[in-house]
Length: 164
Image (cartoon, rainbow, N blue to C red; front, top):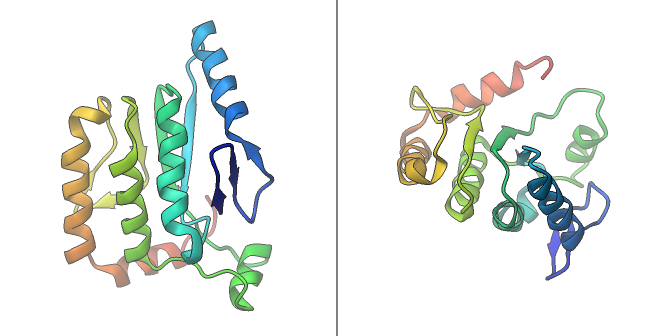
């Protein structure tokens, strides 16, 4: 993924002009339409993970979503991205790297919203309203999981997924 002041590029998706994304979201705000935004953790691969987290958070923070959701990338059999991973064109994140990327996203997210994540961290569900009030607690939980979490168990859960 590449980021300039005006364009957000991910090697797996078309180019999205930042101005267009934020303008369309502002139109929704002005019309009183509530909307969600979703961060797909891991989709940019190891090579672009940091940029993906930071710049996604920057884009989301320029908008006013009522809800920000996160989910982690799972590579399913028969998909082009799994084939790219198998031949070395895409490097997926480890479970620890997925948590580090999510933490970086959370650290850089500045819009107040309901925050939903499919990650369960040390038995805690990080989902809830008032993101900015809970932000430091979410970061602390992610830091704890990065240092002490059972990455083998998390990897096994991801490997055993059969669908979303």
